[in-house]
Image 1 (cartoon, rainbow over the protein chains, first blue to last red):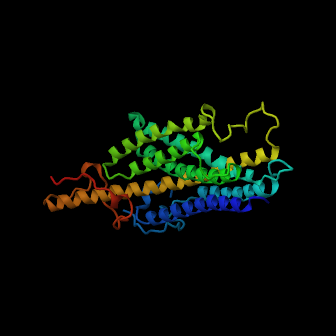
Image 2 (tube, rainbow over the protein chains, first blue to last red):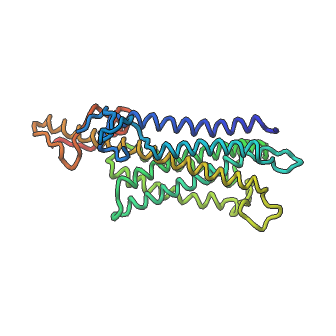
Image 3 (cartoon, rainbow over the protein chains, first blue to last red):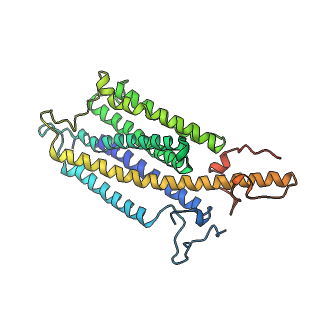
Amino acid sequence: MRFAGYLAAGYTIVLGSLAAYAARIVAKGRRLARQVPVEEQRWR
Amino acid sequence: MTTLRDETTRTGARPVPASTGTAATRVLGGVTLLALGVLLYLAFVASPAAGPSQGFDAVRFMYVHVPSAWLAYLSFAVCALCSALYLWRRTRSRFWDLLAGASAEVGTLFIALTLVTGSIWGRITWGVYWTWDARLTTTAVLFVMFLGYLAVRRVALDVEVRSRRAAVVGIIAFLNVPIVHNSVQWWRTLHQEPTVLRTDLSPQIEGLMLYTLLFGVLTFTLLYAWLVVHRFRVAWLEDRLEAAGLGRAIAERRAEAGLDEDPAVEGVPAPAGPAPDPSGPAGRTTPEVTAP
């Protein structure tokens, strides 16, 4: 496959960034959910 | 008030860890992960390189570059729509403001990824990572505008004032989206014109490449939905903590002034539970509270 290095770099950046962002908001959500009363968390 | 570290549901039927997830979002997340795996298979194994004799594999960037761009457009459109609903008095609600902010943040990530993948793709096809082409420049301006929008959302102001200003900025920033989209037709650019859905071209895009591209758009749409739901719930939690922090500040000022503590003052809920996270909005804002 030609340009494999460019492709690997591009896909790694895309998937890595999305995974890091998703992990960040999940972790932040867990931390904040412990500080807010359950009755104010409408989704629970 | 329910205990904050309570790990049970309101019914107490089943322990649920404190999080922004639900059964529905877990299913959505699972489907999205599966779709991402299929997309990688289609992009790198199943779909051909552009031109059977050329082996031009750089076209495989299309399966993440184009979906990222379209999802950025969608994110900013949702942001603008929610901002308009927030500004309209009849529909004004914190829900629209928080949803606008969540969508804009996810959209800003997508537009950044569009710029990065486009830059790498450009290095292969044009020989440079960056050129002041109309499409690239307007996209960069769009990125900066939404960075500005996110900055406005973090300004230490009264919540209502900050939300109104952010809504105005969000709508103005969205006006750049049609300029970005049409830039390749309005100006002479290196970036190609939109060709995927044009039926008058010959040859047409290869069938499996088109299918992979559309599947990429679908996958990124699922990912967008999952991210926005979770980001919205995080924003909702931050908002609750900010309200609790404001209530606590008012109560403290009233106590300092020797007045009876009235948790319901000015409609602000009483502070609840442990102190809010200092890294959250409650720790950043300086509410305009004056001692009576």
